[in-house]
Length: 71
Image (cartoon, rainbow, N blue to C red):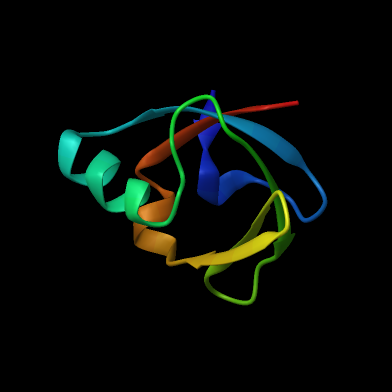
């Protein structure tokens, strides 16, 4: 497992865990939950993820608190 912030553009990953319950709750507001597959489409500072047809920008600080398994 790696932090979401360590993903490279074009990589897909499955969300595995969150560092604490506050991060999990905050991420759920964006539709990012354990077991979901996301793709990194840009890293202009924040990370832009694609989940199905939705694009979501997540700040660097939050990305360091989300663990994923690169597929």
